[in-house]
Image (cartoon, rainbow, N blue to C red; front, side, top):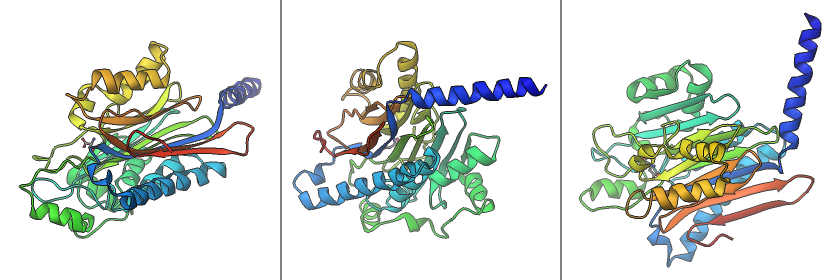
Length: 330
Ligand code: ASP
């Protein structure tokens, strides 16, 4: 009996070792802060710099954890918590407003090692929906909780909640409520995907959803396979854009399936889905993805997408970081 145990442990250690060793990159973190027209930034270098700085801080927040040998799950959580608390982005504080003048938040989290996942949808009082999604994954037998039940769950599990749904408002969204008649193109959502030093992939997505959404509408962000997916055998993916199209095309899982079954690279699979399946006339948006070797893809078919990556090559002290809003990446 004991020898069987030793044998199993030996092979388990060998497997972990080979999967870590096979990694080209020591760790990788990729973030997005939403896709859309982003026209307000085109002639506003100051505002552009503010967004770039926020993306930079998001990357550094997660990278610091990964650099110290922390788990990718902690990196994804800390990064998305930062973006949720930053009113610049359509997630947590700064979320877009529903047609009824409320803030209804969606988020999901997935772990690639065992395909475990958690999500909350249409929640009104949870300060950091991504933390709630993570808790659903770890502490319940369920994958998705919605509405009031999810809000209650968060309270029972000691997560931070807000007494008034208007906590999520910013001067900008208050103005949106006032001017509800006027169309607003604001897309948003935040997301993060990570490959950590242990060869594990994680993905998380958090959003306020689509502006003026009605009837309890839920988008792709909390739907595992549509807005978020992670599988250690393929990729980790987080999406942003017109959620209905991302649901119909099951984008996040679709990418992993193309990678796995068609042997496409992460870039080929991501480009095909974003540029061919969801073209400009149909679903607008983009995604971020990292594969099990640390290769990155960040395509979008909208005029812009807030995005950035940071990675460390194996056996190197250098980290490589790039951030972009429109086409250029610096
Ligand atoms: N995908 C999100 C949704 O449909 C919105 C976005 O990413 O802008 O709810």
